[in-house]
Every structure is written in structure tokens, then in C-alpha cells.
Image: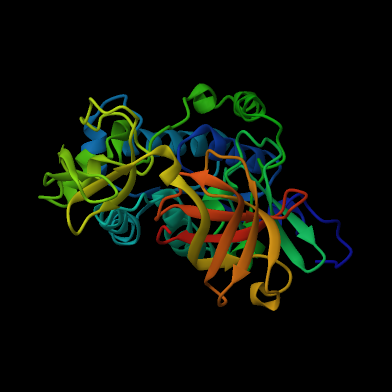
Length: 379
């Protein structure tokens, strides 16, 4: 192939027909639109859907938004657009890499984010390796995030549609992975554009509802899933104040989250109380006033850094951080401890900062994602 061949839309100096791209297809409208668009541009598309959990039970729920239905929807898109589609059984990998840690973290009083671990350990590791084995030039997903070419290589940026931005869930994407990944939807201004794209290609999923829950937690009932995974995990215990005085009893630590106010069952007190700590070892739920939830110092570990210079090359970094996916970025100072550990000081305190959540870094001005780490204990 001539070196002066113009770049195609995926950034390769060759015709689309000679560019193989594996598309991670969940069965939803986003990844379906990506696959259809790339196929229509003439790329050598290979669709791959991961069977992650409880496929047999899922198939029994006719019409439900579940594994069986999603696999069917992805396969139908491949048929309509005329490209090959494979289903890979990743149930064991998903159980080991995501579900088990999710259950253990909850039992330890943390508030885990399994979608990040799934991207990190399953989709962008195992599936990405499978894409390489298939001799694909790159792997594309339906995530709302942007990959931009920077002076020192590919950079990760927030989606153009900040309401849809998924950078919080993708902070652990490494520079090496980023070089291989493509996110064709990141520049779109709204979800309506994605649905219109799917409708243009006549895809039945164009009006499919967005999935709201964690895929293996139907109806958002975390406690029921954890009780099933870890029998005995819902043992009752004491609700105590910050001085250790017993105020009541609870029905299992797994039913509570940091910052929770309702459903504590300790009425009759003058001022409202909030869950400020979960002590899984003592089976205690610790409650206190709202101001006890305010956190300024956030310790982090397992940091993935995507800045141009090494994180530890500076004593301090002024940047923006998100401590929850639903919150806007806030001003903060990052102080590295090692290449993978740091302390973040929030310039204005945040409430409900919880171990097990992620703290994601953004440049102070602009849209670039600088990485992030896992919150591992409160102060």
C-alpha cells in the first residue's frame, strides 16, 4: 500500500476495505450504530458480543432486557449489515474479574463500580487481545468518550455531549489500549443523533431503551444479588452514633451506603442522621450529622495516569476531579505518593465520598482526561 494513501476515518493510511475493525457489540443502540456506520463505510467489520453472566436464566425471561435478548439484537444487526458476528463465553472471566470483587467490596463496606472493572479487566483486556488475535487493526466501542491525537500520542477526552460522557467509567484505560481503541460516537452532540444513525440503517434497536442498571443486578437490587453470592451476608447488627452509642439495629450492612438518610429506622431524633461509615467487621452502621460526610482529603491507589509527563514528576498538580459519576468535576490538588498512589485535596469539601468509588482526573481547562484512581479509605 502506498504510504501517501489518505487516512481513513479510523486513522489508517489504507482503504476501509483493507482495515479490519472488531466492534464490541452489547446489543444496545450505541454499539449497534457504531458497527452499522463502519460497515456502511466499507470497513472489514467483525462484531463480537460477550456472554458475561447467567445466560440460561436470562434466556428464560422472554422480552426482558437481558443477556439472551441482547445477544439476539446484536446478531440481527450483523445480519442486516452483512458482517460476521461472534459470541464469546466470558462468564468465568466475568465472575472472577468483576462479580466476585463487587460482592467482596460491598461486604467490606465499600461502594464498588463494577462497570469500570469490566472495562478494565474484560473488555479492554481480554476482548482487546481477542481483537488482536483476529488480526484487527483496531477495536471500536459505543462508549461516549473521545480519542484525540495529541503531540505525544492519543489522548482521552470527555464526550462532546457532557450529559452522556462516560469518561468516569473509562479512566483506567491505558495509553497502550488507547492506541488500539476507537470511539466513533464521542463527537456526537446528543443521543438522538445516535438513534437517528441506527434508524438510517433500519436497525430494530434504534428505539431500544437505555439500560439503567448494572447488567448483573436486575432492578438495581444490589443486596439481593450479594445475598445470593455470599450467603449470610445480610446478618443484622447495630446502628451506632459516632461515639459508639447504640441507636438501633439494622438488617445487614449490605443494605446501606455512605450518605444514606432514609430507611434507617431510627426516628424520633431532632436532627437528621446520615450513614457516615460502614464497619463490616463489627457489622455496624455508623451514623452522624450531615457535616460528618464532608471530605476534603481523598486517598487513592491503583492510579492510571494519562498525562504527558509522569505523575510523580511534580509534587502537586492542579486539576479537576470527579468523585462520583453523577457529579460535575471539582477543583482539586493531586499530590503523588508513588507512580500508583496519591492524595487528592478537594478545594471545596464533598459529601458522601466512599471507598470503592473512583476519583477521576481532568485537566483544569479543557476536556482531557488525565486518568484516575480508586478511593480506598475515608479520613
